[in-house]
Image 1 (cartoon, protein in one colour):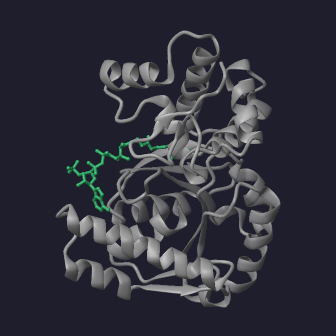
Image 2 (image 1 turned 180 degrees about the horizontal axis):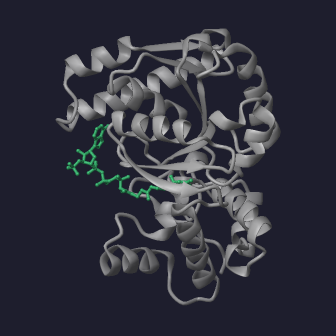
Amino acid sequence: MGSGIAQVAAQAGFDTIVREISQPLADKARAGIEKTLAKGIEKGKVTAAERDAAMARLRFTTGLKEFASCDIILEAVAEDLELKNGLWKELHAICPEPTIFASNTSSLTIAAMAAACGRPDRMLGLHFFNPVPLMKLVEVVRTITTTDDTFERAFQFVKDLGKEPIRAKDNSGFVVNLLLVPYMLDAIAALEGNVASVEDIDKGMQLGAGHPMGPFTLLDFVGLDTVYKIAEIMFDEYREKRYAPPPLLKRMVLAGMYGRKSGKGFYDYSEDPPRVTALGL
Ligand code: CAA
């Protein structure tokens, strides 16, 4: 998601620094952005001049010192609180006093980062959606220590990115995942209960409820490992059955079936069009 966020920022006119942990990953991020922009040109949504201007505003690095000049830092590292807080502490020592710290976490508590980052008043959540260049929404998440000034600056920044912000409280899942995750888990439970096939559940929600993707296509798209992790965190916070990951989801994650990113999830992506994976149900 980091490269998607960086692309959107650069396209919106912001000088943007992208940090990756190694040069090959930084090169991969650049290539990914170039590919998405090329697709945008193909679709007639981006001009060649806009692509060149966006690429010129992007700087790729493996260091952190460059962030001393930034007004806002958007963090999109793995959903691991220790990893995130280690990074925030390093950044706090580098960044000037007004710099806002924003996490793209989908389920961790912003308060836990605010407490550790050294600037609890200037910390908040900016939660983007996949694929970032196409999805309009950003949840702007304030925790109990976020000041009004920080919140309003971040809210305006999201508008300046050309996205649509909504206000959300620092509750696990915020708004969208609070509703979306139980829906995806229910689809898996329906499959486990032999209510219908993967294709028919997907078709049902696409054609019967107007969703752009059915729940299994969406699960594969978001990543089964990611959904599993988010569900575990939400279950831990709310202790309610509807957030508990169904056994099938856990088994698939254990088997390395993460969805599109691993080539196989509820669908097998080794063929075009993808075929439903035989799960022995
Ligand atoms: N650059 C610019 N525009 C582009 C583009 C690009 N690279 N690629 C496509 N577009 C444009 C298209 O021109 C099209 O625009 P119009 O609607 O104006 O014609 C639009 O984007 C859609 O593109 P496509 O027609 O090629 O693609 P699609 O219709 O198959 O839609 C999709 C793709 C947007 C991903 C759609 O399937 C969708 O909305 N799926 C659901 C995604 C979703 O739910 N995401 C949230 C996941 S949850 C999450 O992320 C949060 C979390 O914490 C887990």
